[in-house]
Image 1 (spheres, rainbow, N blue to C red):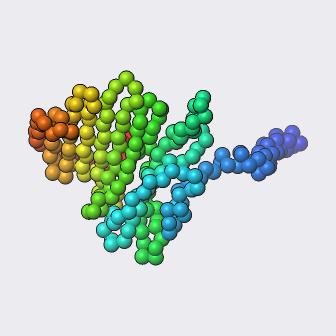
Image 2 (image 1 turned 60 degrees about the horizontal axis):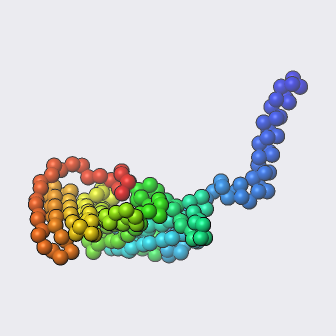
Image 3 (image 1 turned 30 degrees about the vertical axis):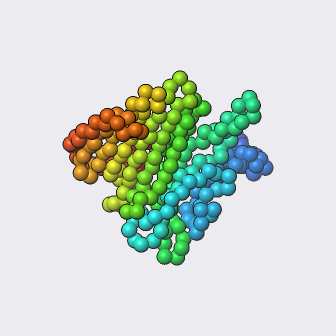
Length: 231
């Protein structure tokens, strides 16, 4: 009996020691719980933790006549902050997208957060920027653009348009532009997933000379949910 009691007491002592170690060690305690977007709030400052980068847009997303928020945020996680030899710091923390619906009381309530939906900048060789906006009709536009810093003059951007319907956000349109700044070669592709129409324009889109446009009918597929693929 004594032997059995000792075997049971060892895990108990270990658990107690771990508890006191976490309680007395602020760093270990912080690792257990990282800052997160708030579930609700009246202002952007109440929703986003201090020190985070934030971009936001306002508009009526769910057609209830009340202003809503869409946020694009980047945390300041030390694990993703890189320092060059010259002391310059770059924050490569992943981006998060969030939607908050407004309410008659003035409180914005979190609808959903998407953590791995939008690609962020991963290195210094390619500039990557992301922008979010809300159209007059209440659709979300997410623009992802890139520009290479070395060995090439390629640049491009894609805008994804999402609309709230059937309780979630679905991709209803997409427009992408790709080009080479030196060769003056450009191509723009616009897709309307609701009508099944695709338009491709190529040529020098800057001077608008020698442009060629073709219309393509595409097969209608079930609309894709926001978060079902990485942009």
